[in-house]
Length: 112
Image (cartoon, rainbow, N blue to C red; front, side):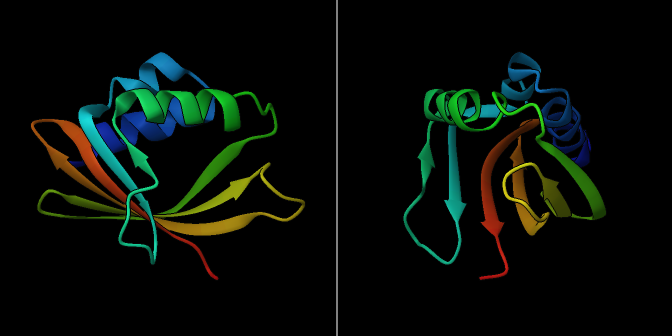
């Protein structure tokens, strides 16, 4: 299975605000990092669901545009433009590590 499949599925679910389809793409032991920190900002699938339910999918203006995607082994690098979180779109790079068909770890980079 390509590492791209769960990443593409979570991206589509993100834009559809479909929390169940979104969560189906992640491993139970998921860890998310907002870089440059070394401490995860999200640990576990329950925390991920709570964050996206309370802080993302409740926002009808939220959407992401994929600017580019690179797949290298079990890592997928998405350069995105996110709208709806601030008056101006925010660019970010997300690096997803996929194991056994699920996203196990994600690192999110923002311009400052």
